[in-house]
Amino acid sequence: MMKPTVVLVHGAFADGSSWTEVIAHLRESGVEAVAVANPLRGIASDAAYVTSFVRQMEGPVILVGPRTAAR
Image 1 (cartoon, rainbow, N blue to C red):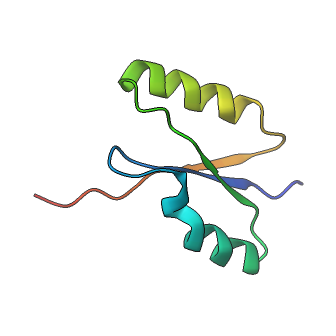
Image 2 (cartoon, rainbow, N blue to C red):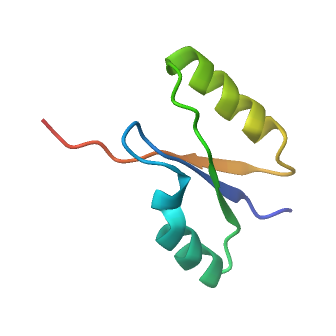
Image 3 (tube, helix red, strand yellow):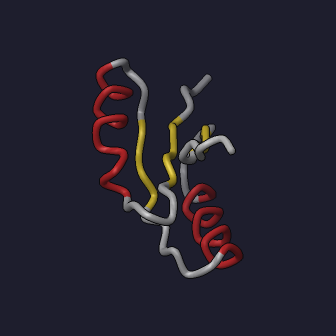
């Protein structure tokens, strides 16, 4: 069974580089991880872009987004 790849998606006020330290930590732990460059054009188009990115991945994927502040 293939190990999953962690795909990290940044939020509205960041870019893919915001995940650099997380990716390094995951890879040091033996987990493959990548960040998707979310284009931030709108919810529907961003979702379509991320979906397309994930569908091109080989094997299982764990999709991760940023934590939002509690209200």
